[in-house]
Length: 110
Image (cartoon, rainbow, N blue to C red; front, side, top):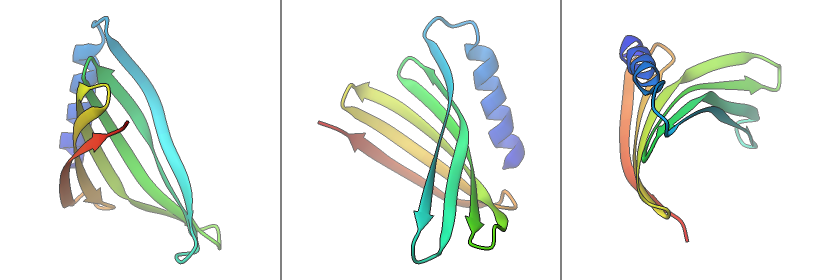
């Protein structure tokens, strides 16, 4: 799974490098879990080519004892149908890069 995620990411980046409508950036988020008493973080590059987006993410946490824990990875793919509607899929893997789940959905905003 790890090899597939990395190969897909590099292939998309390499094939899109010459496109005019490409955006490559970075994104992430940090949140504190009150019940879990730990910070949870996700970080990774974002790549967009027209209506198609790809965002691999590494998931980690830090507890109150400052112990860093690698939690797993996700690969999100999106396809924008309009300015307010997009389809998405998220494949997730655990810390050993073993497959966990695949989520498919629709996002909307008004």
